[in-house]
Image (tube, rainbow, N blue to C red):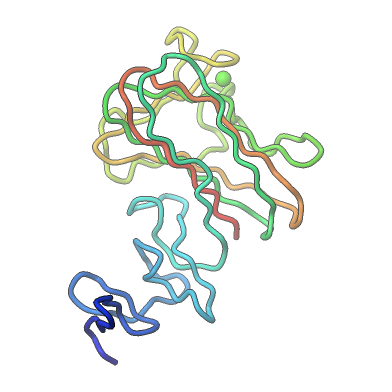
Length: 213
Ligand SMILES: [Ca+2]
């Protein structure tokens, strides 16, 4: 196997089933192997995508596995100080989904409330999406980079609740932290994912991946 880029008509690429790691063309990876970008996984006959694990360690993606990874919402927001609703519609082609919310600030905080996943007949599939249990029960939270200003549950005393008493405030920096929830889907049915967000100060990035598997 050639380990170097092949250049044709001034376009350089690795040979089939290999990826460029910055030094060499390396063999693409199989199911369960760690990855940090899509072209590290065998996407041809093995149909693998670089997907988030329960607690991502490298950005949003770290394992080659079978499924479909959708970037549902990718926000770079500036100060607004009022809540906005974001929605994403999709059709289930697998029987479960890992919803991963990645949050990284530039300055100040972001406030979140009322995460929701509604199925075709209006049933709510996310549990504790509005944090009204007063804790993060049913969510998986991780802060793999030990970022400062990490996410936490806030009460109405913080003054940024969209509904109820509790909400999620997050300003992780310099790397994102993650809120994750796994849900069961019915193949062929349509779903609407949504949440409310307020940029409570300066901007930052919020990235929501829905990985169906
Ligand atoms: Ca709430």
